[in-house]
Image 1 (cartoon, rainbow, N blue to C red):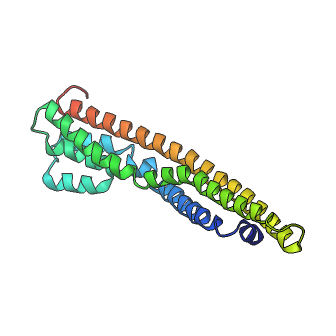
Image 2 (cartoon, helix red, strand yellow; image 1 turned 90 degrees about the vertical axis):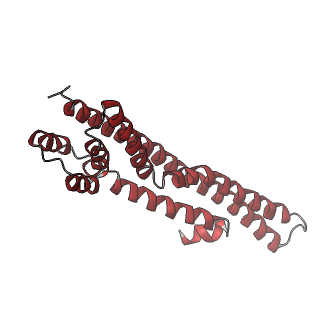
Image 3 (cartoon, rainbow, N blue to C red; image 1 turned 60 degrees about the horizontal axis):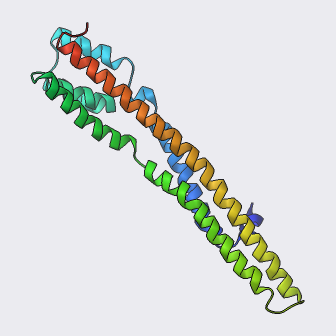
Length: 203
């Protein structure tokens, strides 16, 4: 691996940095975007029990808000329980936007890495080609042959490096975007179900 890095030249270093950052974001998002952490399945039934038993209070809402991201949405509904159904749904949508922003954390950076990495690879390719054509300035010497080989190495390794970094970054970016969208829809549906329950629409 060290030999490849040396052969690729200095243009490979931005790609290495981008790959390390992408791996860190992917690992962090895998850990953070767990369904059992974001939207625990047992939370809605528990809140319905609170409503039935009249245990909804300001302290309970604050505790719920700190429980999980779906708890923030439920807390916004419970905090406005005396308002109309439409007003509660508006508060849910507002809380949902805040939660969505938290769920999408770092995804823009990951998408940027997926987009920029091929361009960084192309930059390395251009630099390699410049070195390659520089070898033709004087013909025949061993130094020029070595420069010719170095130019080819820089061009090819950086092209490959850009693709190797970009493809996984784009795959995981798309995956996490879909996961975030699914979590948001799930949380909003549960919150609407709570609103209907609070107003006697569902039991």
